[in-house]
Figure (tube, rainbow, N blue to C red):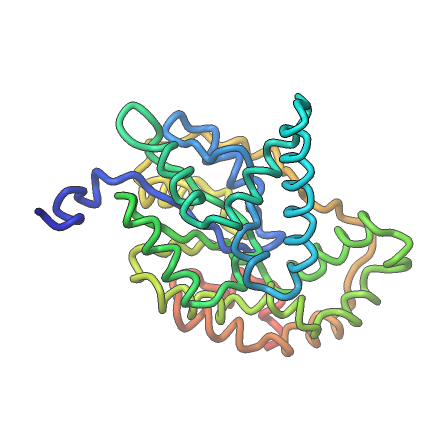
Length: 295
């Protein structure tokens, strides 16, 4: 029997795209942009949150919620109900039976169907290299090729945007100005897990070759050249972007972060700036990320 790679040359194999963030890095826009193509079928969710909830301690409450909703949906169906949360049941099934996850996405692509499918869950930025290797193996066993997409944003801007989102969603928990919360939270483990792009990409590169990893800056994401490079890398025809839409964008306020705080946060994450600059010099983060001026 011919090897799998001979049966499915890369240029003919459908693509499974795994999004690894970053949070507040335009992933909702990317989902809508890619999903607007007739060559794409991203399934029933933007963020499936399967592997982060299985692997990351901070997402354990989310795992329990999904399994509980899945159990409720199953009970509803078993008693003849017609309003079961089928989406929650599918999510729970993916978590309990990983093969069903790969089988589902493989069912969306192929001759007469889509060219691209995927799961754009920013929390996957915290996944370890062994899990990423497992995902690659599961995808490739089904005749697909895997790609990883990561959008990187100025670390200070990313953290500030995330803080404003938290304040908007939970105003009683995070009262007051956003600068105070940036100062309090920026060095915490959960914030670091979403901001250490250099560590995320190091783990990704352990599991996948460099030509299967597409890295873009949020600051240049909406530029025609950036989008053309992305669609070409994914084997898609050009897609007309809606650059006026910004789903899930955190509204800005009149507040401005003081320079001393911007400098403090940037210096705390110096390894991110240096690591990305070294690994991806063409991205030119030293000039694209405004906070880099303090390093």
